[in-house]
Amino acid sequence: MDLLLWVTIGFIIIGFVVLASMKKDMESKVAFIKLNMEEEGNSSKARSVVWWIWSTTAWGIVSLFLVVWCVHHYFG
Image (cartoon, rainbow, N blue to C red):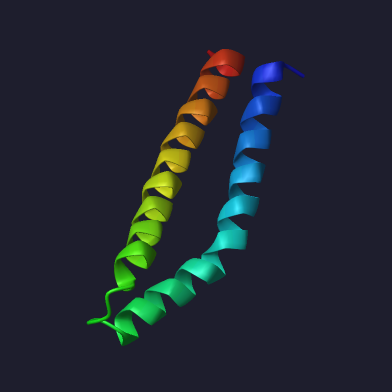
């Protein structure tokens, strides 16, 4: 098997593990923000949730790119 395939599989699996491990914490932060809308400490929690969303989106885009590249490499 080619290194490209192993990098793609590893990137996707590691990404899923990281996202799954952080999901519960992000859900609790969102619930805390919803309950305490007027508090000052919410901005750091909101920033971390927004960064998590952006990084999840970036991971998804890179994963799609790697899958398309693998398909093109092996079947193209």
